[in-house]
Image 1 (tube, rainbow, N blue to C red):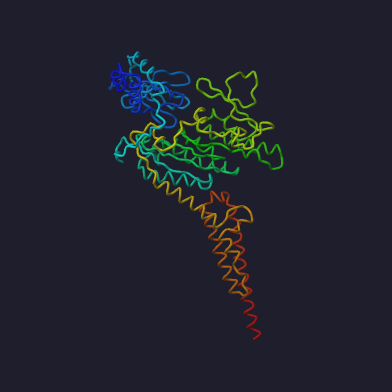
Image 2: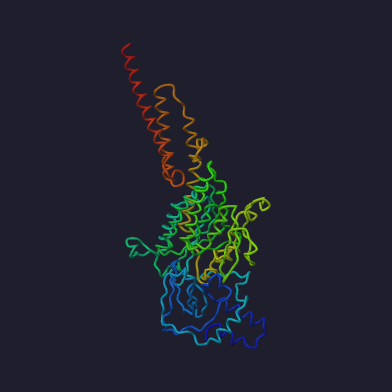
Length: 521
């Protein structure tokens, strides 16, 4: 007899309010990975004999799920997953499954008890809105059952404050601090991977508050995203995105992970600058726009979100229509204006923004599709909404035994990079205009005196060379942000070469003048 059955036995004859209270208490001990589509239907089943080997499902995200397979179709697997002596029914799409391993489980015989339990698990089993799960303050770092949530806040401009080096430093520090890296095998031989037994105990949570402005940031994303993908796919690291804001081209970033959550005020989308793309030729414009859309689609496909590409299109261009309805719990999208023959059940998410459809503000209307928490979860893009790290832990199913590592070395590395970028901007002003010379080091160069004689010119020139080399050093340190193609550094190299030539010519003329003057005397 499992925990829920015992409590139901004790509850016989009690009043309805007392019975409801007992059900809520029983539900609080549940810790089960319920999929978004089945979240409201936890079911209690008898557990298979202890000597039975469980069925095992290996997900493409790297997560391993043990339990009892109840049903397998061409598109999905339905199974019970046992946690703390109680099992919950969960459905996994086969598109998310890498491997299915059958054990020697036997199906529970007490189907009647199962059905009874299912009928007595209404909305009362859901987490009360005013209940905050508590962290286990007695948890020890060396406790093998302790889950560690390694929280890193990624804030600022995507592509500069958050860059390839930012993420590389983050994961390097996390490896050292979590201490869960082991030698890899096969294609990862000679490298390190995350110890599979610790994958779901050491979870990196990336809380995003970032956005981008320029079209080139899409291509910066192509440098940034693979760093996280390698961690998830190749190294087996579990990385959770917790979105407060991911706007502009930063919107494609979270799709690298199978674990996406939103804060209550979370926003994802708002790219739209493709509509303003104009280099003077309509056909060339459309080719360039299509190129960028294709790149963005690639992020969703590789991350396993290919079915949501229509939603991406509506994020990218104001002219895109987007309707949705649900069949079998899955979203069906329509990317054009609705016609009578399309039938009922459609919800408008974004119109074309033309004529009477134009909104005063695209971000507060529906000219541009901007994902908010409720629709992100309805569409199956988000796994849920969490206001606090405790709420997120509850959503992740680890709320009874976890520790948050917030003041960590990875956060220090991220903050140091961001601070370095801010200082660099003050020093060199990387804007690709004449305003660039308003940076501190440029101002010092501009203020250098020309010099009225050879010694003054030599001193001034030497200082200028020193400042230019300092500028070049800063650019090199943050080249991926300021000078990815090396053009700026090449120009500085030319300036340095010219200064060297001027110095040699000035010295030659000075020697000549001194020599001639001596002869006249």
